Picture 1 (cartoon, rainbow, N blue to C red):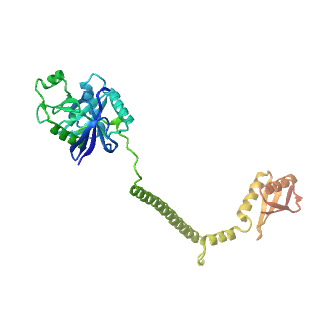
Picture 2 (cartoon, rainbow, N blue to C red):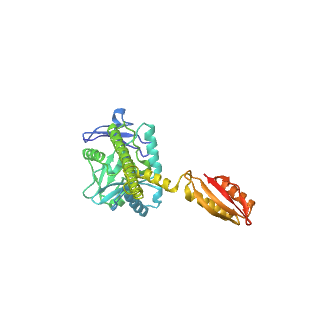
Picture 3 (tube, one colour):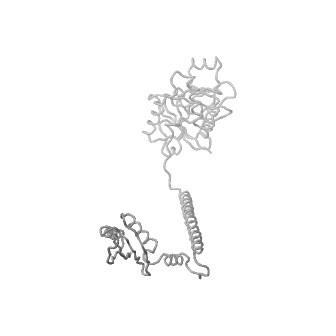
Length: 362
């Protein structure tokens, strides 16, 4: 069932606006001027036939953008004006061909502005010849709201004696009776062959009420995405935790290999540290302390270590043989600078050498 209002756009300001009210696939009422507020639920405007040029062509395109591009090529071959300066609309495919409508952008803008001033926002704009039925052969003519229109299988134009004779090559178009015309117009409104409201002139969608079902669906999807992100983080944390446990177990195994046989259970790393401390000795240990002493003595000319004694408290007793008192003071000051506490015994002179002991503590 079709319920709509056909609003016929005048060719110029001297002509009146006219409308047809269609209901149940039939013209229910008609009049001049604008339809009443109750008749504007779905308005389809009808563009004058003398303002629109129609073409038919096979457009092997898979998308609207491809079809429009191919249509501009067809139009550029059939008009003297550049195709990009014209408004080109492409209709739906039928029997392998599509209708192509060409209209000046200024006319489209003027029609839409005039209807907007009158509070009308048409759902579609249909060229007048396409309201006539497509003839099986030849041409048909009809008086459509005060304008004579002719249509063929792949043509449509405003009826003018000279132009019609040229296009039809002298064949007289068949006159449609009003009942057939109105039935065809009702069918054309239900499923327009072409709509001029395309591209920059497309109808803007009005904001509707909030679709709470869609909102809930988006919320569920957002929650699932959040849970997936959280699950990824949890898995990553668990993976790191398991990896750390594995490394700790391997470290404990390596540490236990350095312990003596028969060592009881316990923290292998702690027990290994205690053993190392026992082997190294208290304080900084024998190795580090002795290494520091030898480094200092080797740096002082004519100085040498004659004996070492490591005490249980971590101190190292060093017996030295030096060239003189200056070398003894240098060794002591450098050990102090290295972070050790140094105590010197009484040094004695014998055979041209100065000997004595120094106690080095951390």
